[in-house]
Image (cartoon, rainbow, N blue to C red; front, side, top):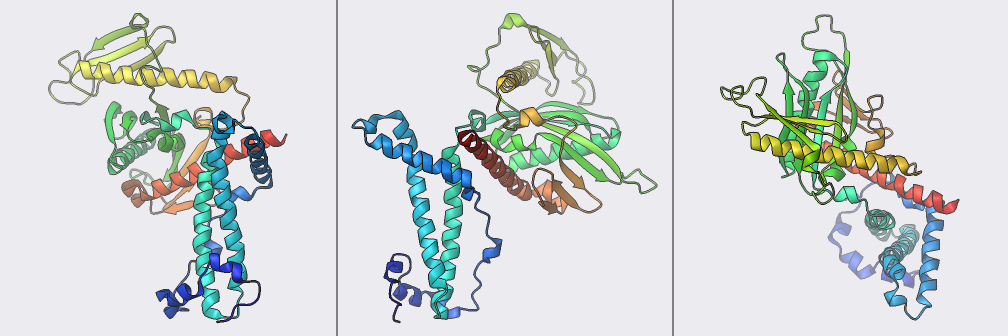
Length: 400
């Protein structure tokens, strides 16, 4: 095969002898390449982001002119970002070269160039994910491994309580499937089934980074099993994820606590109502009150109640910090109110819609709530959108 003049530079991307010996070349066109129309959109091509990246590159080059650049903190900070940008630019150049080669009259060569182009597009996507992370400041809360996850029935009466139970069970199953650990901190059931509220102490690698996207109002639309007229009811369940700080982060003075014990209420066995195992703690400076009666042991209930109190105090402190910031960054803490639904579970249509993502739907609600695979995928999309939004916010401040 004789190459057209000027294509020698493409040998750094594609070596013809390697391509011709590639086993997949023998089966083309039966071999199915991934469709480029389905590739994920590369968001970093935003013009403002390009200008921001160019500014960082210029800043880095200026820093290199100083003799002490190797010990310059800003230079050290920019080095990983510049390395990623350099690799990204190389990939883009190679992809452009491959597009030219894909137009070759040699069908075998064009097909293999197309395949290689698709593979490099995928690498570019993942590299840009890494670039987004490198450009963003570290979110301290995202590294928290321990959280309090609360599920509470909202509007809808008994139907809301039943769905709250299903949501609670879904999260417990998902946590177990992830290999994480959890303890039930609070659980208030009802005689007719379902729960009014329930809290879980979750411990797993970066648990808050995942569950912060679950915070908000979840809406369910379905025909209750007790409904005779086949009328669809709409109910809501609110979910809150509270990052659990270390004791170093939140110090609680024992003198600020009012601790009471009482006998547990509700079902729970022959001993549950015979001992003062239930614990109520009031934090006097803030008047925050927590209760725990999930265990027969008063000591364990006290420990779990203090854990929940510490999370609530940290949440309060975090909200005060957010209120003082002029940033427009949306966070779970600032948007988690009852008037804002984040997701709808439509049982009649067997469809789940997350209202934060345009055009994203999941079907088979039963599988969604039992396996956790779609929940994981949904979380990845929400996390990427949140990171891109944060990056664009930083870039917009730079461009003003």
